[in-house]
Length: 347
Figure 1 (cartoon, rainbow, N blue to C red):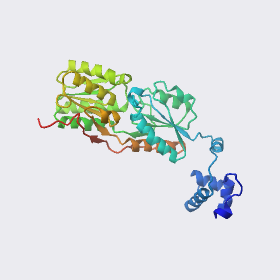
Figure 2 (cartoon, helix red, strand yellow):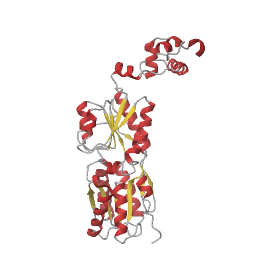
Figure 3 (tube, rainbow, N blue to C red):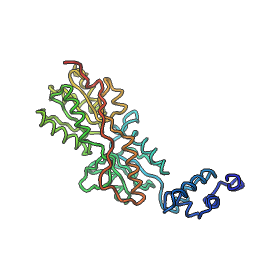
Figure 4 (cartoon, rainbow, N blue to C red):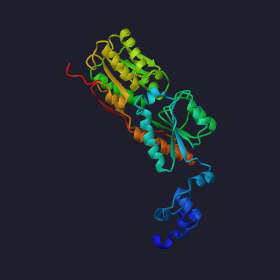
């Protein structure tokens, strides 16, 4: 077929060439290659095989003009870069980005990575079809601008605003905190402190709820602090130093933000205490910070690759006009990764 059916000359094959070889209309070829219309599955596959054999590549610019779609989606967050990425640029946000980009590309969409900024103003000028918003805050600037443009979005992490009914992928905020706090209790913690970001993201809200519940059950004197996310490790060091001075009996710090946990480890060690024998430290995200800290930090595998991919699938379904899911999509259940920062020897 390639020799007799392929177009002659040096011009690249067109959709008309694919239609001629397949013996169908150009409309049928377009529908088959773009997942549209009611094309018989066998015919759809045959057309895809012919297109591949002929070396046909769709004209993306023509598609955009015809459909009005940008064929691009954004990944956005209002989390400060000191938390979302950090000095290594390999934090939570970038792990999500890698998985989301791969998933988007499978469907022929580009992923536009918007740096985590508080204002989110770049969204007004981006040519996109929708966005995945990472852990939106209660008054999230990115969400406000997406709504203002009438663009669909999916939240990665439960939205906390009362009027935000966007589809979302659940990152198990309550269960993550419960897993960490249960582990600390099993390792001997009797006066653990909880540290969250000062915003109202689901991870902070749910962690507070889980901590208060367990404190009541276990008889822990509750110590909860909310630290500004913009300060990163440096401010966390200063604030943990103050926490230990105010609550010297603290024997564990559950710092949901990994930058806070690293700063807390330094503060504990500089106070003359040891980690984990005197004060244990655990965090939420199992990233580069957790693995390279000394001692390495106990954390949780959030299965972000699967969660990010699911968020893209959910968004693209909405871009194509599907009704939003009535129930949230859930990432796999969080898995504890116990490391040196909490593993005490026999006491």
